[in-house]
Length: 279
Ligand SMILES: NC(=O)c1ccc[n+]([C@@H]2O[C@H](COP(=O)([O-])OP(=O)(O)OC[C@H]3O[C@@H](n4cnc5c(N)ncnc54)[C@H](OP(=O)(O)O)[C@@H]3O)[C@@H](O)[C@H]2O)c1
Image (cartoon, rainbow, N blue to C red; front, top):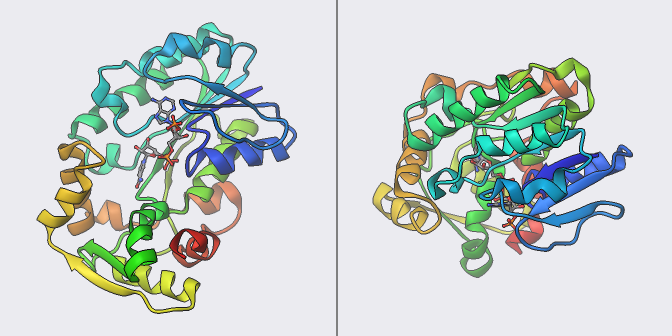
């Protein structure tokens, strides 16, 4: 049995489905009850209380570990989750980390994530680590204004990064969970091309078949909006990346192609699959 945390999110949902379709027994974990694919067990648990994961982990062979962005800020110790997994007999863990541990290693959440990577490496379990850059699903922040006003409002309209479709992260995670050849793998995950917010708005318009206007926000305006959903330090870090990506953040990684044997999806692919959110 494989335990998937973050199971109802952008990555966890397609990952849970892919594992179930591969014939695996899957336990999906999130804090709120949710519909899951046929045959999948759902367990309500909070990662901030690792001992509460025991019912989910009992009998598991593998764990996909995804922490919500604010977990590091809650005072919880995510390393205890690895301890609980090992004590429950889990043999393999696939950790969702972030490219930021390489490109911007000094922020609070990245220092904590790097420490968790080290815990995973030293756990005695088989492991793989996924380090994605920015997600295509961040465009869902614009869904409401596109629906209501046909507007995408974002900072740094002409500065791009190679954002990744979370479905590709899920596909790589499934490969790492199911295939021994990925043990010890550390994968940097990006999309196939650098794409700017203005070009993302054009791709959403193309998926909708109707115009979408781009409105450029100042950095301060964007920070005020983001700070409602994330710690101010993380909002600043994210804006630094979006406004002035480093060469490492602009690099298109070969790792999705290497693991999956196919190119990563484009943003246009993601927009076409998720167009209902913008209608
Ligand atoms: N967005 C980016 O550009 C980016 C880039 C690099 C890395 N990341 C990382 O990617 C992760 C987000 O992935 P995602 O987009 O798939 O997430 P998401 O769509 O926001 O979904 C989060 C999932 O985690 C569950 N969850 C949240 N807090 C939880 C908790 N305390 N205990 C148990 N379950 C919890 C949620 O369900 P409930 O709410 O019901 O618990 C949901 O299933 C974060 O770790 C983030 O740091 C994101």
